[in-house]
Length: 329
Ligand code: TYM
Image (cartoon, protein in one colour):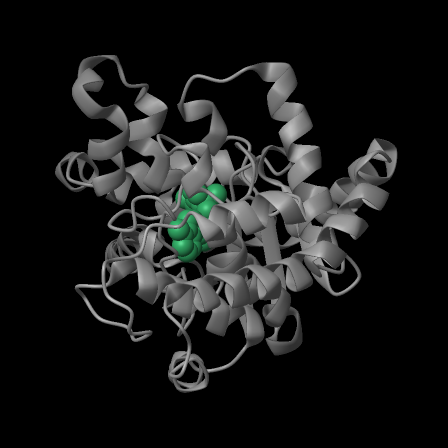
């Protein structure tokens, strides 16, 4: 089983990234050949600062290793180090329709009212993401719920490529976690937790200290009831139950049973804060030990890129051949 996923080096990673994606990456190392990519090229599709981008790649590399990725047991690399991604992105535009890209939710949301000024890169973002996965002929893509549309698109692109040029690419399957596939903002539980456009109090960062974690959960928006159960009319409480269940690796129903006798939401908030602190503090400690050794982080990424390139290059040879591009084999 070959597993591939990508993560942006933008902003600070939050609990949604951790529970929706990073925990699955770590588990993927035991389930198959796991390949993880820090997608710096995707980060250039929106306004950014070049020096900061480099720093954020180091932050993200250190965080992923601190969270449990072991570069000896997975391939961890930086997207821009493997030029095959951008080449395949261009080649796949031949089987990607303008209309479908124009309808993607992310493009609609992120270009906002500024559609005419949005970068062409933002428009092509899903094609580069398809190239990321298809270059490795990965069978499975572990992501949070918000990436469902992108994975559907890459499946369509792969199928269309195979139909037009002959069986070449693997159609990958989506893998979202059972619990916490869509962690919600703590202040506005009707929206997902996210780094862009959200307030500081609603977003719980993986590197937040214990005091901040306690405060954010204590002030989390719930509802006027007292019952600790999940339900569509209780997005805030449902979110806390799911977070607690995911962090403790138990079923949400078990959390509901355990806290059935609690005195209101205070107990749920405290239990969630305690569990998140216990889970994240060793990650934070390892992060601090790793982050400053940038030479070592760069060496890890370079070794990962060499392994990734060897796989992607094979796919590209086949794709070029099928498409009649370049000198014949
Ligand atoms: P990114 O960097 O925005 O997010 C990384 C991962 O975190 C998940 N995630 C969440 N999961 C649960 N609840 C949330 N509130 C939440 N917010 C984010 C995302 O689903 C994702 O899995 N386009 C991708 C990066 C990418 C990629 C790829 C992913 C580039 N190439 C190839 C898979 C395969 C992105 O922006 O992720």
